[in-house]
Amino acid sequence: MKILYATSEAGPFIRTGGLGDVSAALPPALVKEGQEVAVILPLYEEIPSSFRNNMEFIGNTTVPLSWRRQYAGLYKYVQQGVSYFFVDNEYYFKRKAIYGHFDDGERFAFFSKAVLELIPLMGFYPNVIHCNDWQTALIPVMLDAFYRKAKGYTNIKTVLAIHNIEFQGRMSSYVIDNVFGLPDEFASIVEYKGDANMLKGGIEAANKVITVSPTYANEILDPYFSYGLEHILHERKYKLQGILNGIDVDLYNPEKDKALFKNYSYKAISNKKANKKGLQKLVGLPVADVPVIGMVGRLAGQKGIDLLTRVLKEILSMEVQLVVLGTGDWKYENALKEAEKQFPTKLNAAITFSADMASKIYAAADMFLMPSKFEPCGLSQMIAMRYGTVPIVRETGGLKDTVEPFNPEKDTGVGFTFKSYDAYDMLDAIRRAVTVYYEQPEKWDIIVKNGMSKDFSWNKSADEYIMMYKNL
Ligand code: ADP
Image (cartoon, rainbow, N blue to C red; front, side, top):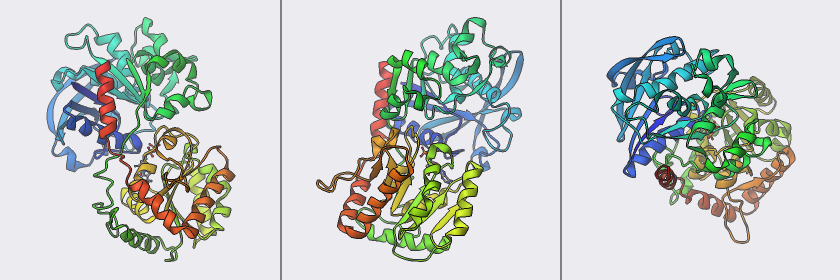
């Protein structure tokens, strides 16, 4: 099967979060299972020159976008058996930051159209186009509106993967004609509640809609999680499916990760301790054998930072240290920086994006806190378990699907969980974890090992994806 994977970010070229991780890992996992896979993404300014200098220029074309005629260059780079194609247009993509521009709708409408327009130049006529999030959600719509009758396009099937339904590409309905250039009979597909909504268009037009965990696939049918799309999703429930993400177990490997102070494995787990010492020294916390709670992630409402700030004092009144790494909402960044001044011997907050520092925290921490309000899948909790760090999570989305609560009678389970989005329920879960850490170290070791021995590799998910493509 030939699968064209369209995405707005893919590691190691460019990555701002979970989508970049998934786009880096799923395509090579599909290739390993014998599929032919090409990935296509924009050629952003921020893609390092070490990659750019080794790309092959394939050709260029003109992309019609309503009344515009825009240049699209095509570059190619092959890695791990996957062909990566890059769409070049300096007007749209030669900018600092890959998202957050006033014309993001136009930028990604252009990219979506370019993907379809460039198929002949790629020489890769796919059986399936796998789209991701709102940025590429217009591809199924544009395929039906403009390309269905063209040679090689007639039988292409489309999949839309929703990594986070909060972000929908919503803007004034004026763009439907003026930017997307969609004919009147397609306007209602992307129109929603008086606006243009790119994600909704994709949900309507794609043959299959995937979310990144089974629990999240159910949750988004509920208005609490759906950000207004529950009616559409109910109507399209027959094509909705949840497939859990994996993680790149070669990249996230405590035995080989070069960022660590000391490498370790399941068998030589005592070496993990050197990482705690190393991190404490690095960030200026007292070097002590107290449980270190780590957090790595976007500082956004979604991630439950409100719960953290609400009971921060109570958490830090325990014999623990808290190390946070993240960027995002200025109010959370400020709150954490202020709290750090107040609790200099207990809290360290690094407001930056650093893969090196993230690895150091995953390895150094004893516990990993992820109290998300909602979590489509979540990768951080799986990375934490891979590094022998015990997750404390709220039972939602992929967190519920990956973190089985510890059962002291049967010695099963991998972490500590709580149900309600409530700061004191979270505090209770942290207290339970800290109590086991101090009072039952032998049980603690079991939890750590249960987590480390779980298989979070992409193999299983890749098989599920292939089955889903085949069924299409
Ligand atoms: P989301 O996609 O909602 O941001 P995920 O848990 O699915 O959350 O994926 C987050 C990924 O981004 C993880 O690999 C995590 O380690 C990484 N990450 C998040 N924030 C940072 C940061 N400040 N520095 C380094 N890596 C980060």
